[in-house]
Length: 246
Ligand SMILES: [Zn+2]
Image 1 (spheres, rainbow, N blue to C red):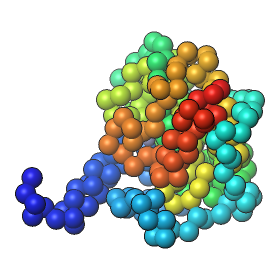
Image 2 (image 1 turned 90 degrees about the vertical axis):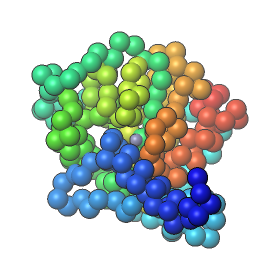
Image 3 (image 1 turned 180 degrees about the vertical axis):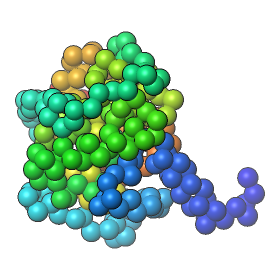
């Protein structure tokens, strides 16, 4: 690589990669009321906290992020798929059986979730993501589970089917998506408490070690799950983190 390849070229390459990943999995164009997210800024605001955009605060929750070594709580009940859609996976498309779970991958949907407050808000969001993924030619919504900002867990793609959430890395890979754009705002403490509890439960159920719990950007070119959720995932999986100790 020539040294003349300047920073702007690198940034542009990064933006293109980010956009390609965005198109390949973790984004839904959503309904007409949902604008596409701002393009990923490849300069990581964590490198210079003074340049980080202000956190949008969720009005229903002042949003203190839990410490990753706090005790892990119980897994909330999973809301069944029938509560948000009557559609079935389109089995005439290229559908594969999951045939066992060996790894788990965490995502965001890259759409702001600060307006999501009610069950019907979450249900509408999921249906919008499902429709977008089906328009991609996919069997169904790409993820197996989703967690909303209030910390409720929603069943998405049936977990006996392989998901569509990391390009070329979907085999035996359980996809868990948090509603939100965590480059734009912080995940709520309720969502993070549920995430740890739910991941711990899935790890026990499928005998997946913490070293096989990934974020999207760790196994594919993507900005997902956003800087703030990525930072949290690093902390909770660290040896002193509560997921590692679960
Ligand atoms: Zn993703």
